[in-house]
Image 1 (cartoon, rainbow, N blue to C red):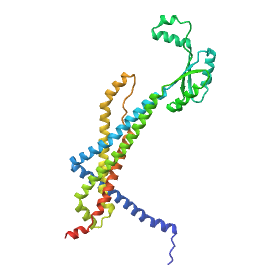
Image 2: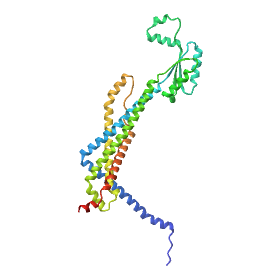
Image 3: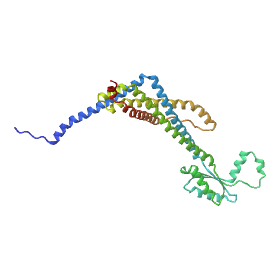
Image 4: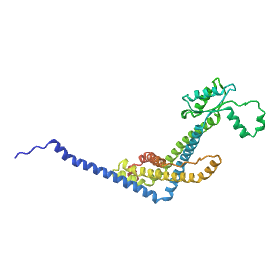
Length: 336
């Protein structure tokens, strides 16, 4: 009796079924074990609420401090950006410049690539404003002629609205023949930029130091957990548990510590911003400003939680890597 030979494609198709099912079973078992270990690690933390709460509080404070300073720095940078956008160069023309010459110079400056707007203040208009605001009407009547010059208010483009750009523009305008004087107050702008840069660097240094402190706190906490579960680790290694199997619960413990610390940090930040915003708004009103402290947006909250979980995971991994290798099944035989 002859048999019909199978096609190679049919053989591969029938053989692929068990392989796929076997792979999916392995993945399902792997996922189930991870979920079980994660739940067990969370239950162990909740079973010791006081110790866990203290660790979460320490982590929350360490995470909230640099993030709060970064939020403050962002708010200050927003204020400085608003001030820089209002930076203008005041150009006083010579007394011999006529009305027509002032208009031509205004048109010439308007065509520059680094100038966004030029406003011409006529000398008669300037005198009228000075007369209205100074209260010196009678004294001004004794003047034979208007002593005030034509004035140009030059606003740089957005890319030049900073200390370097305004300084460069002022130098170029001061070299023009018709210009008698150029006035721009760059001192406050330069001081503000220097202070902002100093605060930014200090915040990043503090962030690195506190991140290291969080890792050390998690590492020490995991080290104590390893010592408390030393017998479990020895038994797991005796029955053939791999290093990955043994370290997995501690890694999830570190991640849970990180998540809890991140949530505490978010709560601290929200409470601090709510408490400080009232006096900050009252102070801003006195300066005719609408400044207020900005809280963390949703993506910022998610980013903080992810960073906190990552720090907890790294701290746990470092502690496990260092202390698990010192625990070997031979200790039981030696004790016997």
